[in-house]
Image (tube, rainbow, N blue to C red; front, side):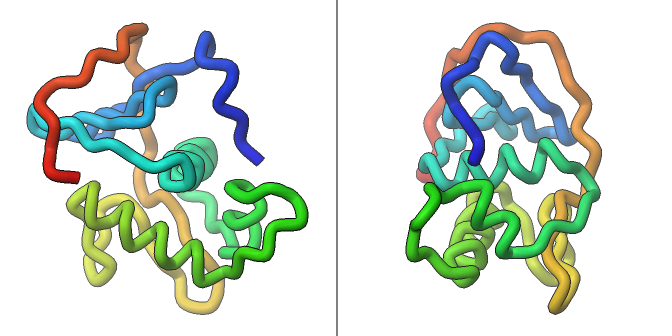
Length: 127
């Protein structure tokens, strides 16, 4: 499971017009702030920590849940759909999160780290 405690090592990741701040629970895109729930953020961190690596739903579930949790693989599909909506992604022609049928999901881009140590939200989006 991913820990959120160590923000000292956090960095910003850039994907074109999208900037994800690992230390905070938001991203920036086109001047708007996108906020994430804890599980959305955990899933996004699992993807950004393994760019272009195909990960099964069960592995992703292990990354975001506590041991002994009764969550199912369908929870991952729900979270991926929410992330896609917030990121402006599309399942049919993905920009960020790609699906390989019956095999898993992957972040379909390589992040470019940038040096920023501040977590200052810009304008809030409707998400």
